[in-house]
Image (cartoon, rainbow, N blue to C red; front, side, top):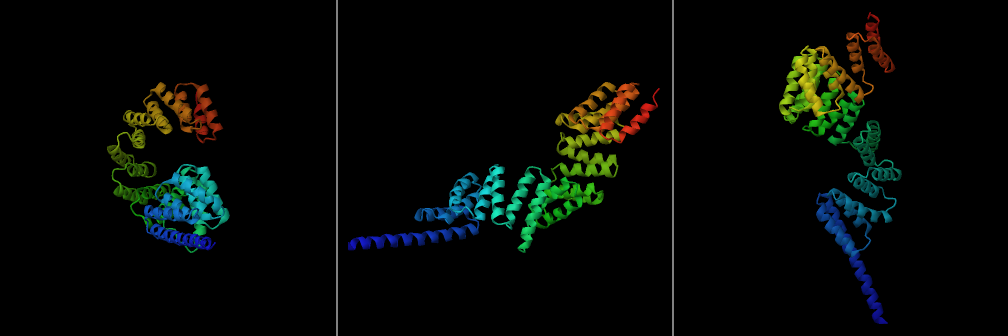
Length: 380
């Protein structure tokens, strides 16, 4: 029986050695992961699992690195195995949520991130990712709610958020909710961490333009042009400042034309030039630009309204009526089309149809209903 005792000691010793080797390999993998060498780290973690089957920490390390390497499907498969043992470990559910998010499984990602928060309410990154999912879904209010919680969680640990993309996305959401001063605050923080991100300058320019801070808006749109001279968006932005705020149609067209030099089919620039030409009473010249804008975007409501106005002013009543009605078909709450249709019917001495436009404007609570009614009351 002595040999049985020796064999048992041998097996025990081998297992102990394997466990020690597995732990060493795991630790080497962690060090490689920390310096960004995820592929090499996976190799170490896999060898550790071979020596010590069911080595949960090493399996987690593999899934963690797979996320880094954008092998999200692989990460899901690996991390699901870990979940069997780590049913109450927040970081496991965070990595699993991240893999779900990156593979478009947003419902599963949300469930995983909420599990993280349930297990560890101050896990800030889970709030951030929930905010990013809401941002991607254009749910701006929800995104901001999660962003506020993310910031509170980080501040409670004395941490500062130095992620330019986070601050950009927060600013974008504020802009989308017409909270322009808040948007600027977030976007300026984005600039602190990255000064060559085009979209940040565009969003600051947009916020400033809405606040009628015209010189600042132009300045930031020009900075966007410095970053990306071949992007038409900033040229359009400056065009809108001159068009809507400064009421300088000639200078506005100058900037829209710069956008058209980059992309002759750019819809906003074509619309902008058409709008400016209409404002300068150059209705025939406006028509080709407005037609081009509609050709590019068949659902461009304001372009149909503006084209109808051009036709109305040159007394092409049939074409004007068709354009206005198309705008209403696309947006049943459009007020301007009804107002101009009312003027068109008054000119045609069609009091019944003109009154119909007034009635529809009243339903929409439009201020234009009063002035159009006054014009109808003056008809013979």
